[in-house]
Length: 168
Image (tube, rainbow, N blue to C red; front, side, top):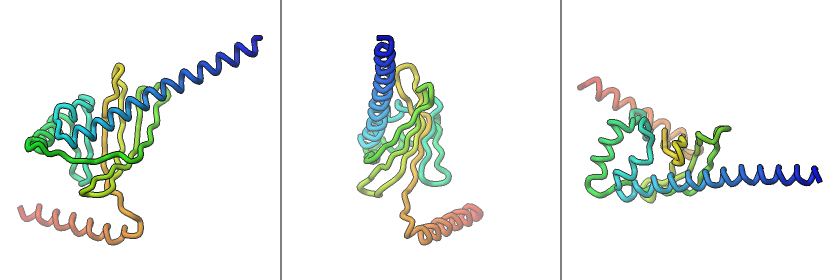
């Protein structure tokens, strides 16, 4: 009888942890899907509301590091003021957690009809019962078979930009 009670206890503990992970996964998916939807709807308040107070968004260019306050807030206000945002839909997402389940990190593949595929990576913090984005970074996905050509284009663009800056 003790063995049965012990085994049942282990099952309940395992199932409880699985339920917590499932609840957190559903909540994080809800945050991330809402984040992308808010951008598509140019909903500034909702979009920025997904970030922690010291959240950071990393764009695809080397200079694009946007702390929430003031840089990302100013950029989003300007970009969304015409009622147009940007549309990226997640088609694949992987989530992992710290042992205490208060930090999560994710990677996802997003697709834009206009621009193609990107990789998003993020860190989310559990604040009370809510998950908030502390860091989100987008990178352009480049197929390996065209990497050399893309690399040459990038180097040339950066060199030109640097030369233009020196002329100013």
